[in-house]
Length: 108
Picture 1: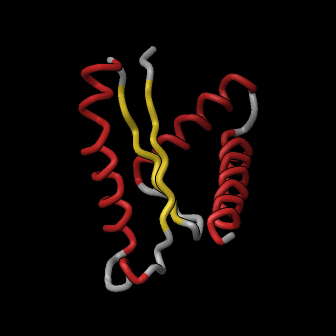
Picture 2: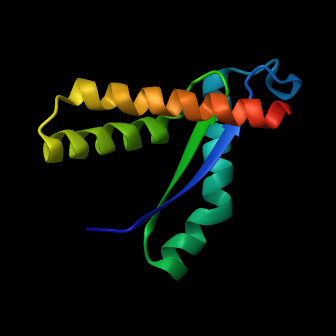
Picture 3: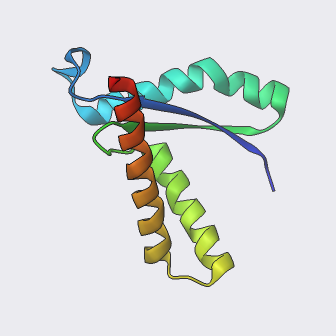
């Protein structure tokens, strides 16, 4: 069992900043920024692993966040004896509502 710390970033892929860029490269850029800012300290000081969770306001998920969601869904499905597809669907639904809520708050 290893402790893991997460840091969340939500960005809007249609912003002028990303207009001429591939969305996948923007996800990777944000993951790398988070890693650069936090990973070394988390590993050395906190003695745990670090995973950046990057999402877009349109519901997209960065590669490392996808791996995280899949692993969490596997663990929950195993523990609760539910189907993996039901658990991952529930996680994605809750995430979608959380993203919508964050967009609504940021627009205010």
